Length: 170
Image (tube, rainbow, N blue to C red; front, side, top):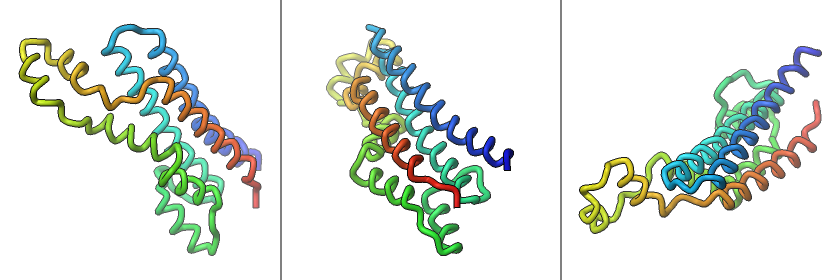
């Protein structure tokens, strides 16, 4: 039984670690005046928030004794349905993915992965610039600022804390 508690603690610690890394990236973004570094730190913070969601899903899978290392919402729902169980935590995550903080994080994560194409006019006028500088300065208008990311982190952490408070061993 002590082994299960230690594994559960690891799962929660991993989620918390992602929040911590996000906080560090936001702090670094706030301290730099370099546009390229700023974008890198903000993207890193967003990646850590996405990682926190994945870690939270692992935490839930472990809580419900599901045997997987890469759980998805669909997987957890299907496995719980086999046991005739419903996860209120999963319902909260799905709701937040639709209209809450997780929807903002998912959108930002997708945009980091597949940034919008730059404006052709701006591209033509700056063709002589260094390519990396060009990509950063032309394509980061969509990037949320570190204050928004900090707020998302705070909201997401509150959601996780509320869910953990309701999770009781069965």
